[in-house]
Each structure stands twice: as structure tokens, then as C-alpha cells.
Length: 322
Image 1 (tube, rainbow, N blue to C red):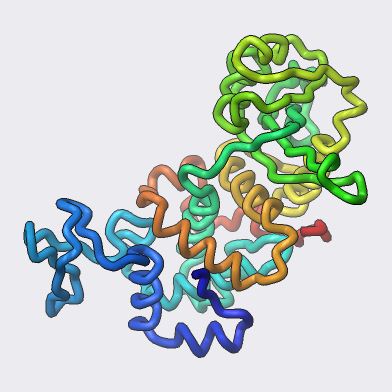
Image 2 (cartoon, rainbow, N blue to C red):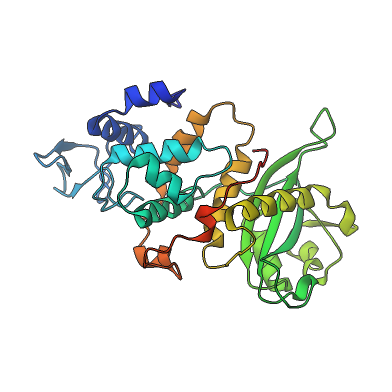
């Protein structure tokens, strides 16, 4: 049974102590009771250091071991505050705002936390898209010189897949779940790999006539070729994505950390109809426990570490209807 706070008052009452946060994580990580990650035994005792010790193999583990919270020196209460703040920001959160809300002494701590939590927004083993799915690609980047179209230079290429639920909708309109991914190019290999990764075999793919999609029917998909102008739900998704990224990056998009933002957009978009922000918090906590630890070097990439504030964290987010 899903268990989450319904509002800020309830959140603060439930998670005012470190022990309350620990208890919540235990309940989410082991809903059927403790399971030893080494031998699978369910018999354990809690040590004086608060570790879970398996009575069978004597292996010790903590509730945060092997999760996104692995090795953190900050209280879990602060992590919970961060996750509540992020999921309750309608248009997305930035590091400067998170730093202020949590009272963190370092902007870079807030920045790293945001990117770690964005990584957790992709649930491991999530179901692939199915049914009728529109697929397209778009280039993300600022105003730069270079070719236009599928040969554009100095820009990041993002593949987009969107479920078309209009047939099942009483209004005749309906966008289902989406998937976004950076791809190296618009070749058949890249596009087919994207489709196979994110769309269930046997589904119907609707795309334009680009040759990169021509072999989809040979690898287990039904394929409909449409006029590019008829890919309306894919184009609407791309438009919303670009408006959101424009508000975050102010048009100066770098591919170095773009994947993190694609993950966040997907998480928010796919839950846009949720009537409870508390449920988004619940999902993020749940998925953080399923996420592997993220090394600092993997997150930083080309990020400045000299105290310079990133452009994307200064920008005011545009009014995107999530």
C-alpha cells in the first residue's frame, strides 16, 4: 500500500526526526521485512551502530548501502526535505533555490544532490512504451552556426517516443507516457537501438519517412510512415521540452548534463496528471532506493568547480503546463 504525506504540514510532522526517515526507508526498501543482500536470509539483528546484521552469514549492511544515499554525511532528514522540495516545484527546481531552502553552505552540494536525484527519476526496469507510439528526433542547442535539419552541427540530438492514447480517449486526444534519450546521430543503428530500448516489440511505430526508420518492420514492429506535419503529439512533446529547457538553460544548452534534465522532464511529464505531489515524493524516495550510488566524477563531468554559478540555475523557469 502506497504511504505518503498529503501536504507540507503532514510531511513535517512525519519526518521531523532522523529515526522517522530511517523507518520510512526500511519500510520502502524491505516491504516484506529485512532481506540480507548477501545470502537472502530474513533473520537479522540491529547492532549498536544501527546496522542490520544477518544472523545467518553475519554480514552487515545499512539501509542506505548500495542506494543513491550511500555514503552520505548529511542527515536523511535533509535529503527528505530536498526530495519534497523538488517534487513540489511545478516547473522544476534549481540548485540555488535548493541551497536556500535547505540552508546548505555549498551551492555545489545542492547542485550534486539535484543531479543525483534526477538520475533516480528513471526507474530501473520500467515498462516500455506500447500500443501506438510516435517517434521523432530533435536537436537541442542555442543559436549556433552549422547545418540545419538532421545534419545540424554543434547541437545535441534527442530521440523522442510518445504513446498516442487518442484512440482510447473519449475526447479523441491523449498523450501517454514519453521516453527521451540523447543519441549520437540519426542513423538507422542509433534510432533502431532507441526504439528497441524503449518500445515493446509488436507495437506500432509512427514516424516520418526518414531512412533511419525504414527497417523497423524488420525488427518486430509495425511501422506507419506519416507526413512529418502529422506527428502532432511528438512535436507537442518536443515543443514543451524545448520551452522547459529554455527556461532552465536560457538557450545555452550543453550536452554534458542534458541527460539529467531529460530524466527530470520525463519524470514530471509522465506524472503530470497526478493529483498528489506527495505521491511524486513517494516515487522519488522509492526510486532513490533502487538507484545505484552515483560517483562524484560521473556527475561533475565538465561542471565548473570554482564557485561559478551555472547559467541554468540562475534562469527563471517558464510557465510550462506540467
